[in-house]
Image (cartoon, rainbow, N blue to C red):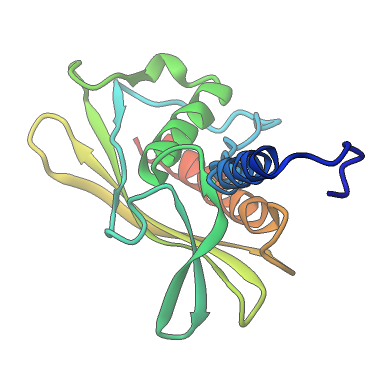
Length: 198
């Protein structure tokens, strides 16, 4: 049988084949590798100070982006999911966690409060693009941000942030790494904008 075993009886051989098939089936059903995202690294200079308490809400996202799947653009009007790879959590939750971590690393953690607590401002975001375009070999992230008053709900400021990073291929985690690099650029600019706006 090619495994270095002595010849088996017919019934033993059938059992061996079934066991081997079950093992192959178990291997093929193993979950795909998952990838995480990073926060913007601690800035060398002080980015400003936040006056009051800030709540960072979970980002809004379309149904396509609100999942743990990695989005690939295969044509100007066509999206797909990357096979055999996924995020470690739903994308909006991951972005919220990394955005909060970005503020913590900038020594603004005392200004950030959790859901359910009283806040002066709320940072709301919408993930508009989070994809690797295989036609241009580029990762693209676009997040729209709003600073909303916690007292009256009035929009204090609005801005859209875009980031890009080279993505020469999609295999071996390269797509996730490229999207992570593009996101870090966006997170850093959201941090500075927020800290100098409120």
